[in-house]
Amino acid sequence: AGNWMLVSRLAPVAAGPVVAAPAPVAAPTAPEPTPAARPTIALMPKNKGDAYFVSCRLGAEEAAQEANVELLWDGPTQPDASKQNEVVEAWITRGVDAIAVSVENQAAISTVLRKARQRGIKVVTWDADSEKDARDYFINQATAEGIGQTLMDEAARVMGERGEFAIISASLTASNQNDWIKVIRARLAERYPNITLKTIEPSDDKRDLAFRKAQDILAAHPNVKLIMAIAAPAVPGAAEAVQQSGRADVKVIGLSLPNLCRTFIKDGVVDCIVLWNTVDLGYLTVLASKALVTGDLQPGATSLAAGRLGTLEVAGDEVLLGKPFVFNASNIDDFDF
Image (cartoon, rainbow, N blue to C red):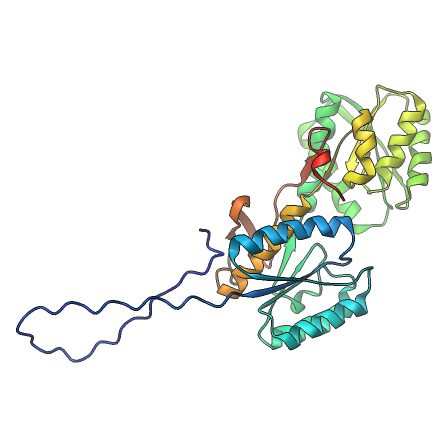
């Protein structure tokens, strides 16, 4: 059992006055520890019908069974910050042990999460964070370093570590995109001297614009061997352009969702996509929530035993899921989101 499981501790027996005894007396048998009540952990997605979150729920249910917790799963049927607040209020009234939320609107939900903490409820966020003082921990599914390094390493593998590539981003101002690009550039400089990044083009998170940008890249940079699209709709957009061009020598990789890219991966246009394993994200969120309730995860912790995921890093007030997951032709059909 990992340290997220409740460790029952025997209370020390109070010592009485020492008296002489004519013969040794057997020590009293310590009473069996009382098993703790099953903790109730309430998990909220942004949208409980969305395939991404349905897959997170599978992992959450697996962990709930493994760790013997009661799992509540509720939330809006479409992204709705006020509905998230209502559900949290109901959970506070019910007196659950832990609340874990994938936050739709940071400012909107943080007040009610603070209220939950004031009532003694443990609060974690997962997938998307609240204001920091509104929760105990954030379950962080991916770091900029993990995403950027994995993307660059996969690109280098596909390219045979030489040649030209281009990036299609969401926008030139998106902070997470710029963080990833900074890591991609650093990894490129550090490890791959024979690869050249020719251009970075924004797609405004739109598939049709990514399609046109990919066409432009192929025309302006005919020696490009790979297009790396780092926004979910940009991968199928770029793949469509490459497919229509008939350029079998050009491959696409990127950050996207399996359902958007499945046909292109099976056709061989997209080599792979990088994201995180959503089942594992749900699984970890439940185990970390239980560890908070039982005291196995406390401020200052640097690691967490996370069942089948092994020992994971805790960095400050974030539990890190670990390296991103690479989806390719061999595993794409294991996922539906």
